[in-house]
Image 1: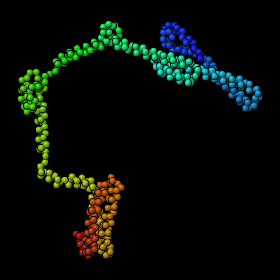
Image 2: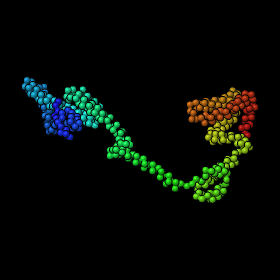
Image 3: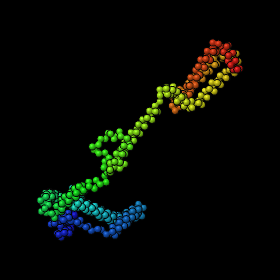
Image 4: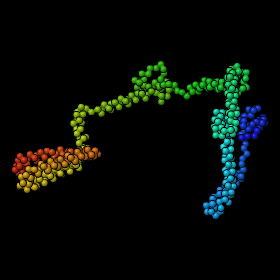
Length: 394
């Protein structure tokens, strides 16, 4: 791929179109402007390609329908296929030239910006994709030579700038930019020093004197009452009443008063004994309030059971087996059912723990009745019946 010569915009020297910098003045060369393809030509080529494609489709349909002999369509089909291939080849070449131009333009911009390593990597990647299109080796050598030259110039400029910052050099070359910068820094330091020296004189005016002198004892001031402090500060000129150390005394008095209140609130030994003896109310009262319905229900169950037995005792007494077994067996069954329900609720439903506790209380109340009924009905059956009947009649 050939490139036209480029004229340097600074010295008008003619350079090769593949160079990045001018051979004479080392100025950066602009990217050569590529001749763009007119838009109407691209549009016409696209329309022609579509037209040729439709013609080829029509010829294919004619061959399939056998309306036209095959030998007549072959020549026409070959002609239009050649035209389509040429148009596609031109479009591919145009796209390739555009991508190559963009890659070279990017490498040129990176090299002019000082990113030499990036420019070299871009050129090498381009050479791998499109070998032999551009003289990549010469461009790479030019970029590397430019990099070496700039490094050498920087190494030479560093000692010069260091010598120009020395005190003697500042006096000799005061017009240089670096000397001016050093002089500005020294002037700024002098201004800061003067400002810091003048700062205490300005700040000392609004500051009030300390209420306590360094040679005065600090501990006796905490013992002296507040009125004596007021007299002392009234005698000292320049001390405002707001700066008097009366706050520690008042704080101490407040602390003492708070300790006195706490000592008054401490209960005596008798009070503690009474409180410890009456702590059952703090546990039993909430329990009764939460479970009063269960207690009422348990009382009704037990009372109804007793009333039922007393009412039918005359009929029950005629059957000795029923009389001996009905009372304590029914009570034992009821107690077992309540206990099983409480145990099941405690295991399966932890949120019903209070209900299971109430059932256990009912079981505890029924157990003595079971034993009493068993003893009375087996040991003294006749007397038991008379006693229960008399109790029911009363």
